[in-house]
Image (cartoon, rainbow, N blue to C red; front, side, top):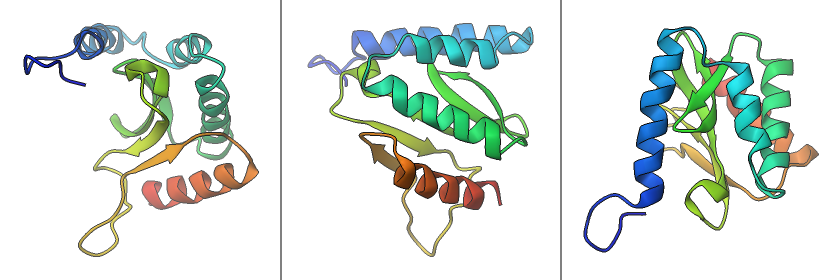
Length: 139
């Protein structure tokens, strides 16, 4: 997403500003579910159902995770650290969004393993696969 001059794109600059604002809100105890739901409400008709499905799954099945926004993405946190997030396609005008896992996720599998998964729609099969990944990630 970098521009041709080697700097950050406008979208990337906006995401960095969002992160700074999120950190301030988090320090004040104000970055939580309301912000996640607002981020989801602002998504387009392609991204919103995926984010809604992920959010419903996490809140229903994984009460040990809390939510907040992270660079404007819905994110789910364990012990104060982002474990997974949904980078929606509309944010950076990409072909598809993805569910990404941070290093606190316990997905280790030998010398190499995936940490991001493209998601083009939310359905029962996708939900089952994502639930399995989150179970593994939580440990």
